[in-house]
Length: 299
Image 1: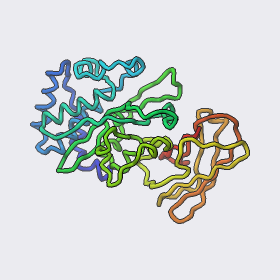
Image 2: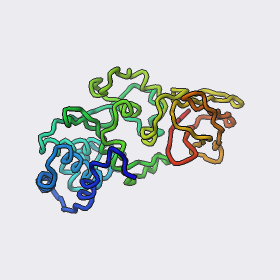
Image 3: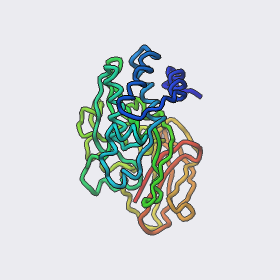
Image 4: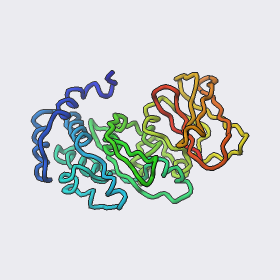
């Protein structure tokens, strides 16, 4: 099924995913620029074509991430190795925007990518990510080519794994959704009528990429840190017009934590309880018992 957002780009996506020009240097990137310029006549289509080429051809560099190697974000490294860090993805998209005279900016800020970032409320906010703001049709839109291109599995933090896993949600992500897991250094890059304070962002749960796809407007508890004793019951509330008769809970140790709770409906709210049976600190994930995720890490 093609979503309303992707429908105008079906032909663009197909063409760019079949485009196989071999690029070995930064100078040769202009081969792609010329191809896109000659194939598509609107800025919106040229931007989409550039984005699809990037997400199709560039992977995340896990080894460079482990070494905190900033060289991996340089365009010559990206083109030569076909992999990079978030700064390289953002710089590459800006390269194409500049080539097509599309106004854009690289946005720096904090992104909460996985369980290692759940404890952000215990530390000072520190920038760890880069994405793009692009002005198209007189509107500023948000794009994260890094997260759109694939995902990092941090189940084993000593053995991170990257896999290509395209996510449409990070192309023109609505600002009111992007803020759930992207906090820009400059408030202007939130593009919200009312800015979200850093104190609020710091305490939020970890909202997964799949969460951004869901029609959810509020959650409770709204903190990543939930303190409870064995024998307590944690009451979860999700505000959404969608309905699921059951919600599932899991953790890295699935057999130890797994639980399926019956859902009650109260107006626009779904109510589900989780009985605390395990002592210790652990991540707790709450999600629909059908395809489609909603993440609730708790420690």
